[in-house]
Length: 219
Image (tube, rainbow, N blue to C red; front, side):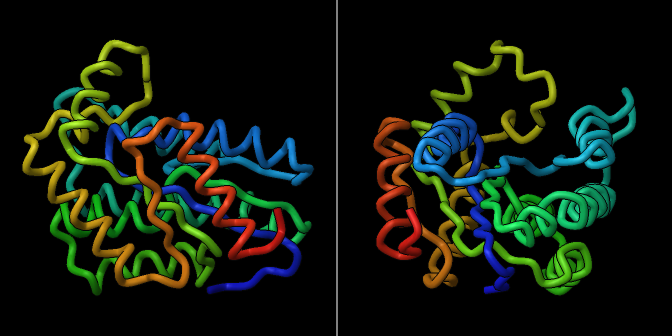
């Protein structure tokens, strides 16, 4: 785990329809209410340059499909900018950073699902982050039938920069994505924490805060 003096880096990961956005918003409110100086961010995105890349990533020009290599390079470029311009400065200033997605999403979406080899995926992550890893990663997980029901509800909800191509895949692909996240969770017991995304947002956030209180001892 990369230590940066004073700050705490929290990432939130999971497949589509697990409730990450609501979880991040509610957790941010609760952490600020406890007095923490908190920066919230997301990937792809987080800076003007990275947000521009996100917009192109989410909606490529009509008729042009992004190759998996192009996807990986785009998210890596955005992550490099994000780390240098937002995350590192915040941590160095003693702030907490709460980020909706980080490098594990590259491992799952461009790696496991997209077919990039682990060697290539890890090299891109190493280059873009220069070793900056979250102190804690909350992995939101629920059965695929639950997440698919949620995706049906959000299809017309106005998420203009959502990456719809990740939603509109067969259930078997959502199962593969879930399995990939659970494999990462299992391989990283010291930093990754399972959150039951079948529960309400408030219950999920309460579980996360309890973990931070017990494990980090700073809430």
